[in-house]
Length: 424
Image (cartoon, rainbow, N blue to C red):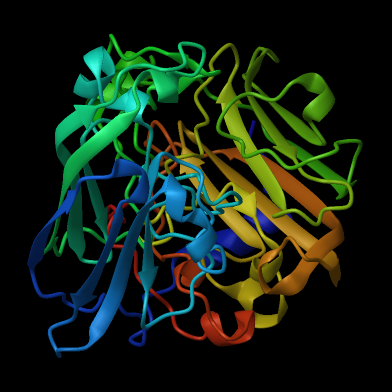
C-alpha cells in the first residue's frame, strides 16, 4: 500500500525543474607552480614563509610554518600547538577557517589540521604512515601543496615521559611545493583516505587504516559495508517535532548516537513492520552551536547513509542544517535550504525545517544561532531510488567561501561537479 504525503508531492514537483541558465561551476584562481627548500639548524626556531601567486601575478595564499620557540611572535595570526606547525591563509577571500589545511568543514579548533607536525610522528613505524608522516599532500583550491621534512637530526633523549622530548628534533630540512591541480575543488584540504595515527591518544602507526572519503562513492565501500541491493520495501512513515530536546552539545551524525543524544527519531519499517532504517538528529540546547545534524542508519549498521550527500567545494553533507541555510531566500536554495530530499535504497526521505527562531551567537557563522525550529521527516517507497547511499547533490553549498551575508552568498546557484546524472 502506498500513501501520498503532501510534502513529498510538493518536492516531486521541484525535482523535475530544469537547471537554471544562471547556475555555474565555481573556478578557483589558477596558481603559478612554486618550490622552495628551507634549512633549519635549530628545529625549535624553524621559520618558513611562502607566498603562492596566481596566474595574474598577484599573491593568492601565504603559507606560514614555525617551531615552538616562535609562538609569542605569531600569537595574533597563528594559534600554535605542534612541535612544528604550518598554516595556509587565502589573501583574496575572507574565510571561516583559521587554516585552509584543515579537513573539517565546520572547523572549531585551530589544531584540526595535518599541517601540525609532532616529532614522534616522524620516526619509527609512525614515520611510514601515509599522509601523517614526513611527507604530506594537501589538495585544495585548484592546487596540490606538498610539505616534506627530510635530513632530520635528533637530540639525545632527555625526558622519557614525554614522547616529544624523547624524539626531540635538533635540525631538519623542509621542502615546500605547490602545483596547479584542476581536480582539487575543495575550499579546504581534501580529506585523505586514511585514519589519523592516533586514536584516543594511542598510536596505531604499525597498521595503515583506510577510511572512506565522503562524496566519493565506490563499489568497494558499498560491498565492504554490505550496502548492495536488493533493498527491502519500506512502509510510509512520518513524524513532526519542535526542537530542541535534552542534549547539551552538537555532534555530527558520522556515527550512531547514544539514545540520550537523540533529539529526533523516526523509525522506518518494512512491510512486516520491522524497523529496517532509523533516522535520527542531534543538536544543542539552545541550538546555537552549528545547528542540527541528522543521520540515516540501517538497523544494526554504523554507516551514515546520508554522509555521501556531500559536494566537492564545501565538503559538508546535506544531513546537517545550519542557521545561515534557513534564513530568508537561502531557505529556498536547492539541495541546501530548509527542505532536503534523499533518494536511496528504494525509498525517498524528505526532511523539512520550518518556523526557525534565531538568536545572537558567538559560535555560529554570521553570528546567528537557532533557538527553536520545527522538523518534519517523511519516508515513502520509491522504486526508482536505486542508489545504495545518498548521492552527491546537484548543487554545491554556497558558503564554502565566506560572504558578506547569507543573502549575498546564496544569490548564485553553484553546480556540484560530483553530481551523478540520473541521481534525482
